[in-house]
Picture 1 (tube, helix red, strand yellow):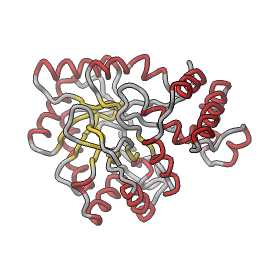
Picture 2 (spheres, helix red, strand yellow):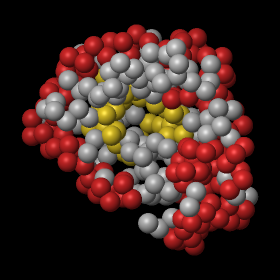
Picture 3 (cartoon, one colour):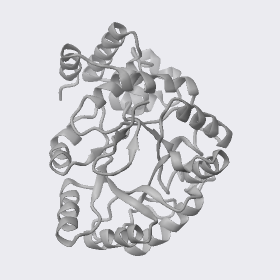
Picture 4 (cartoon, one colour):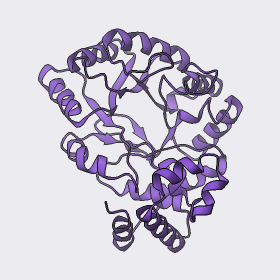
Length: 318
């Protein structure tokens, strides 16, 4: 599979990233190993996780996803072939607010490195922002980690546009590590937040955008085409309350139509639509069964013509 340079870095990735939030949650260790093996066999090489995954599961404390990935990397001996991304700053059970202080970052990177069984994290990302912590303090902490060889590059996720811009400007002024990527929520349904607030920043600063919720919690997979379908899934009611409305119905109809023309799945079309958007480097998507990986492969090579893109854009207009 053809690899692409990740933004301004020397990292190259296949243009889809596996979202590791499912490890230690909906997938146990054995199942996680199986799906990671299949993902790599298809030619993909980038994995995203976070230090907090999956603290929300009863009995978990956070770090379970990193631990599983670390064991897989060690068992398979393929660390040098994987672009490894993780995040810091998010909440844990008992610590309900973000933390981007230098002390916390220095403590957490050591724990992440240990769990991941690696000496270096390829992209270390600010997961959530603690706005009372000065931007410079956070960037200085990252500077220490880059100089120590523990982190190659840094990325941003859930920062406000103002704080993101401030971080980029400060990095330029003081010669500090600069965010090379942005991980926002962005998909065919959830468009306005990114397009209105972040897209211009990403373009002007050459940020590689790796959007999460690329398939809108499964809504864009095509499994929900009528209201009765939501009762068939454990997460169906939550998906229904968030996405099932006249606009959501239009999007699903358009996705299904394009998928039929292209002889592929709505999932592949939804991911391909993202790959046709400016600044998008690679969507983040998860899977719980190896058969769910097929649309990932199809999406990478899927070419949507102007008529298809207009149809999808009009259906999802906000």
